[in-house]
Image (cartoon, rainbow, N blue to C red):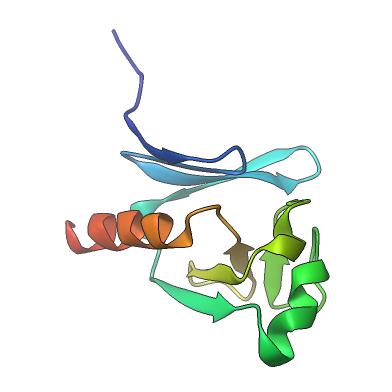
Length: 112
């Protein structure tokens, strides 16, 4: 039996396949997997202006609301995606192509 999944997006830190969003280096011990059906929404968070300081959050949380996976390239990025999964802490990611990831999540959410 073949259990392989079709990959729609992958940049090393973020993987979107046909079932879930995988955020690599989320925990010190590994990845966080979020089924698209568990995602309530996705919000853009520009890392400019007052949010420019967030670019330097390489991993973890500085406000106990957003949790950032490890991304050494984050200081060079200008847009983050905040994932609402209905919990107190929001996984917050900076994919290399945030528009593509946002589109994949939105497409999977509207297909249910």
